[in-house]
Structure formats: structure tokens, C-alpha cells
Image (cartoon, rainbow, N blue to C red; front, side):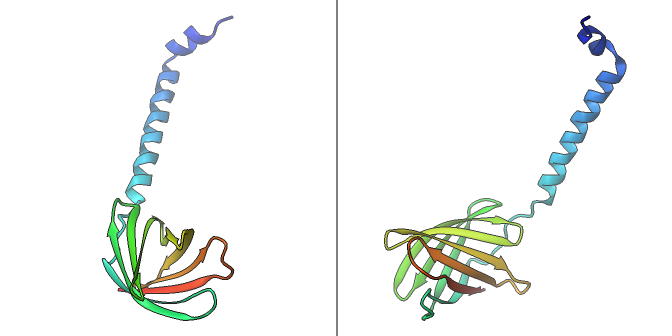
Length: 134
């Protein structure tokens, strides 16, 4: 017995389909409405420690690319390192290349607007830390 013609003509199937479609659209709207635009300062003072514990200072520039992505430039001790990052809620991550090796930093946005992070470079022992202050 072929039930497809019966299901197609049954009024509740059409209503159910419309309700499901509306529910899906509302879920998408709710997700996009909850995605806050990325708001970061354009420049920060950087202070951190290398994996060996030695300190460093510098400046960081951030340029918003989209509501979830950004470019980031570190100017540390006369050297410039460029990276690309993304945001998920109050966490930012960025990748970069340093001495030919990829690096990754993960920041947590603090209530005062500063960013507190930990970073690593492939093949290098230890993690560094970094705080960015607007």
C-alpha cells in the first residue's frame, strides 16, 4: 500500500511541515540574533612571558574582518608578526608564523576589556603568556 498520496493530501501533514519550517527559521533567527558583533579595541599594549619565562613588551593592532574574525599584528622588540583570528563568545584565538613555525594563542576577554592569553609554537617546549590592555 502506498501511503504517500494520503500523507500529501492530509491537512495535518501540511500544517506540520509549515510548523517545522517556521520552527527551523526561528531557531536560525535566534542563533544569529545572539551572535554579538566582535568589538575589540584597535590597539593594545602587550606584556607577556616567553616559554622560558623571559618577559617581553610591545604593542598589538587588531582589525575586525567580520563579526567573528580579525587580523592581528604584534610589534614586539622591533619585530612584526602578523596573524589571523576568530572569536567564539568571550574567547579569541589567533594563528601566526614565528621563525617558520606556526603558533597559536588563545585569549579570554576580561571584564575590563583586556585580553589574557596563553600561546605556543609548534616544536617549542613550554607555553608563553600574554596580556593585552586597551
